[in-house]
Image 1 (spheres, rainbow, N blue to C red):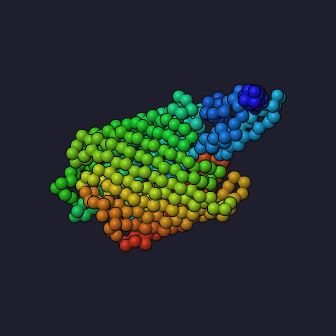
Image 2 (image 1 turned 90 degrees about the vertical axis):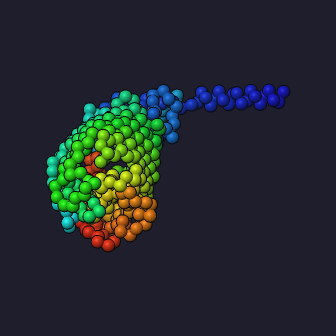
Image 3 (image 1 turned 30 degrees about the vertical axis):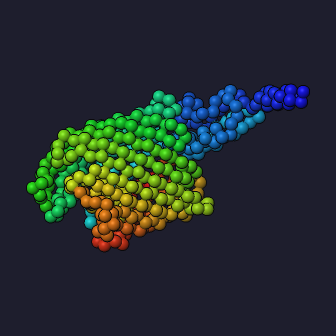
Length: 420
């Protein structure tokens, strides 16, 4: 008899609790001016008629803050009739039509720049449209479309076209040669988001690479002119655990990029390349942000002067110069402390102190090259950031790096956005 009473008691509790479940009778989006409410409704997980779930709402806030169109987001819960609730998602929008510029030079390099324009919230759907022009001795241009939520809140596409032309040093055993390098091609990627932290990109591209000898050393084994049809298959896996509060970042992220490059010419042979960027950010008090990036990369160890990993101002070592060396493997660590010096309304100024360091494997070399002091470069430096909190990626940076390893150069690097 007692067991029957216990069963009835638990059934009564279940029915009572189920009947008292709080539901969302209305979901509203506040602050959306350029972003379509229909896009936000498709993008978030919470919906009208669902049970009130604080964990789900927190997850929605994190996803919203990662959108280019959103500067910040929070939710409000308002009691309604019968123990139910109305929920408001309040969104502070970014201005998303952004010009950008990267200016770079060093003590022994020619001045070069890239300028462009990007819209990060085209049609109110968080679609990115962008185009650029670059002058690095020669003219280059390109355009790109990225629509990560084109088909659903998980599935999208990206397309880009580039026509690059630059002056590239090619490092031979008996010296350095200057080549005019060209790369013209198009890429198509499928984008898929598994969950809040994990997404994947998978795609291919077709392009033409050409090298035209200009001056410097020569070698019988290295052609003076090349024009090669190539194709590429790419896989990117991104584990993103970052959280944002305006321009402050906290958390861990890992981005794996793996590529196979096929070629129609043995002088530019096929190769595999893979690298992983590990980034870690930590808030220090109310005004500090510690940022770290570790890149580990390897490629097929072909003994070619056209190796895929480069040592460059704009990629890995601030102040080192524009493409000063190449390799088939790379270990690079960037660490910096950013401190907000001034913050007033939507404007802020940060100062930063950094150390960039890296080492490379020579083409055709072995893993001991990573320990060779001739391949090691360490560049400490200082920088400034001028930030607008309500314009997406509106961070103008100036960095000065000074080499402390043998034959170190020094130089200033300008750009839009944080270095990493």
